[in-house]
Structure formats: C-alpha cells, structure tokens
Image 1 (cartoon, rainbow, N blue to C red):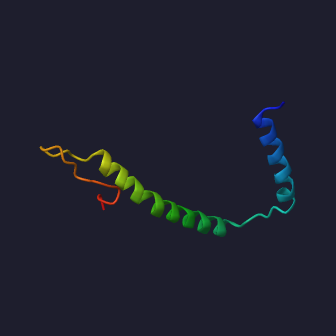
Image 2 (cartoon, helix red, strand yellow):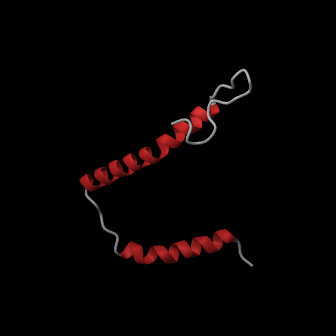
Image 3 (cartoon, rainbow, N blue to C red):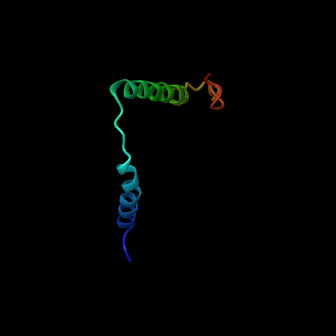
Length: 76
C-alpha cells in the first residue's frame, strides 16, 4: 500500500512528460495581455462577491431585530 502523494507525484510526472516536449516560449507582450485579461476576469468575478460578503458582515440590526439585508441579492 502506498500513500496518496506517491501516486499523485507519479501521475504528475507521467502527464508532464508529453507537455515538456512541446513546450513553447511566449514573448513578453502575449504574457502581459493574458495576465491583464486574467486579472480583469478575476476582479470582475470576485469583487461583487467580496462586496456582498463585506456588507452582510457589517450590516446593522435595527431596534426591532430586523436586518438590513435578507439575502445575497439585497446588498446590491
């Protein structure tokens, strides 16, 4: 019986071999463009969720015990 990490490492090396043979080097401009696109997509997806999380965590409870936000959509 072997551990999970041994199997994982072996599979990773076997999968990586064919990829290493055809690895290409990209110039600086495509790297910058792809990084920028990935950053824009990341911020577009994560920022609204972070905003909702922050508003839900910081909401004030009214004098009668009612909350400002009732669901994940309310903070918008």
